Length: 242
Ligand SMILES: *[C@@H]1O[C@H](CO)[C@@H](O)[C@H](O)[C@H]1NC(C)=O
Ligand SMILES: *[C@@H]1O[C@H](CO)[C@@H](O)[C@H](O)[C@H]1NC(C)=O
Ligand SMILES: *[C@@H]1O[C@H](CO)[C@@H](O)[C@H](O)[C@H]1NC(C)=O
Ligand SMILES: *[C@@H]1O[C@H](CO)[C@@H](O)[C@H](O)[C@H]1NC(C)=O
Ligand SMILES: *[C@@H]1O[C@H](CO)[C@@H](O)[C@H](O)[C@H]1NC(C)=O
Ligand SMILES: *[C@@H]1O[C@H](CO)[C@@H](O)[C@H](O)[C@H]1NC(C)=O
Image (cartoon, rainbow, N blue to C red; front, side):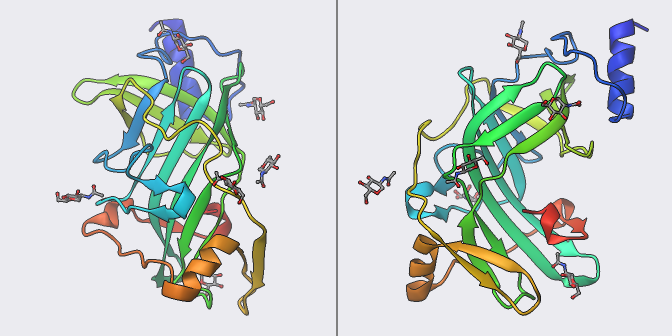
């Protein structure tokens, strides 16, 4: 077996193995990472049609999933629509919808760092928590330990990303070689946040904009799409979602 391929497979199998400087060989460059990628049925996509940052709203896709776009000039945009069940309270299904954009860095050790622009936001629906449906700022820097692009015989380029702890993200397929994204600039005024401590000890932070809107008509309820069971992950702590 070709040595670099073997090394790649080993690194994939054991995500804690020592990293050498990244080489843009066949393992990464089945195609360039620039473009638009999405999981499963490819319905969750960054760009127009998912988030309206100025209004802090979302258009919920028909299926759950994750989409991400990388532009050649260093911007990324991520769209996530997920439901997760609480292992100890299986009926308490937590839904999250996330939109963020900013700058990405392909680190020479093979990691990807996503540094948000500060205007991202997320909706969290936790039916069993006292504050059950709210919108808050989402401004987390995310580290992906490694990534690979394979050529799937039927679906074409397939991007695998591994989280900071080596856990794989569902593979994403290339939807376009163009990066579909909203304008690469600040798209929302990030106003002061309201911090609420709920009686179950969860601390939520809401944006003022979202709170104002909620007073009048409430945050839109998330309805788990039919057939979304496949996208359901069991989580142990809310922190893994946020
Ligand atoms: C390989 O991937 C890197 C990173 O995405 C990119 O800069 C480079 O242009 C790619 N090379 C080819 C031949 O696609
Ligand atoms: C969901 O599916 C329906 C019917 O296929 C379609 O008309 C609608 O545009 C889709 N919605 C989204 C947000 O993709
Ligand atoms: C977002 O996070 C970055 C990095 O932690 C920080 O520099 C920036 O001030 C934050 N922006 C907002 C609006 O909170
Ligand atoms: C690569 O470098 C970044 C930035 O220094 C670091 O946070 C990350 O943990 C490193 N990744 C690996 C796989 O060592
Ligand atoms: C932010 O607020 C200021 C003052 O209210 C306004 O002039 C500006 O257009 C707003 N920016 C965005 C991105 O909405
Ligand atoms: C799951 O349910 C348990 C028991 O009600 C609770 O203590 C915990 O905070 C819940 N976790 C999440 C992520 O909601």
